[in-house]
Length: 470
Image 1 (spheres, rainbow, N blue to C red):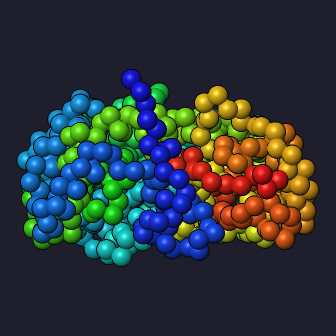
Image 2 (image 1 turned 180 degrees about the horizontal axis):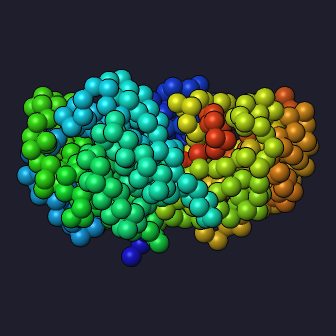
């Protein structure tokens, strides 16, 4: 079977014509790496379904229709789980669904426990809903991955003011997938302490080889739980607002209490696209997962070779990867160092993490170099000869000295940046030499000195000029 990697199908010029937040928020010379949006075309079944809807003028109000059945079929084929379509409720997105359910199962002022680190919007929206958010720190294992600290969780759940626990499975942003035993322990602890268990499972379709996603509601211990699912992450449909809240057998009454007008927040295009994705988008998803798996492995090998000071563990799921810069000697705010020394564009993404995506193939050089991995190139050596490398080396040793600060091995014995350069470098500066187009890298701050990469963006774009102008 021929695999067509969706991450390789769009070039940068095409992407820049998009009108999404990712591509409009910053100037044209900024490569956006700050938001969970993939640089892929739509899966063909999704595109065809939307085209049919447009031709029909099918742009009215949304209704659940057959979406729950489509999701149940997908969940059964992927995870061996058949959620009862009658136990599903339509909501605009996962975050809205969580707030609707919290409004039912908790009271204003109640404590909602959540693992830390976490998806940063939760840090804002839950307190705005009148609940008190309390973080339950995860622990970092010997493999560098964050996992649940069950002992600490047991202690935190025992607090009498804790009324709900929000699990994120697979975890965003750490990329870990809880094991069956961990999930059983979590559900059992919640039941013991009378704490309602909610689970964000939006990244469930994006689990990589070697890990297994266990749907929470397959566990007998979790039948009072409510989970939240959507096609938005796996099929790149974030702007087409649609998600489902799915209740365990003992929580259906709570689901029925969601106000009927909550489904108005969903869009009819989101329902149409999501149904097509769940029913017929499996082959496209398989191709995407193959591309993401290549990217996470390549990223590990390139960091090991060129940035050994960065801590990185390939994620078990999602298109995210966290990079630990604590050993680089850059202080508590590495993003500020990148800005000061490398003139890299800095974006504060909710104070949680520095986010980069792996979506481009051009390179720019300037006062410093920030190395960024791209996709594996079949038959193409990662480093190829380019006589402009001496100029690059001179620039990297310039006033910024970012290369030294990041422990980058700058002996890049060749970069073919005409078409197949495997790396992005930091912001270019035309005054430093006639080295082609300049591009800035978008970076954001993280208090824990962690950088986050997006692996799900297009790793192959054409059109860059060589360092030597060739």
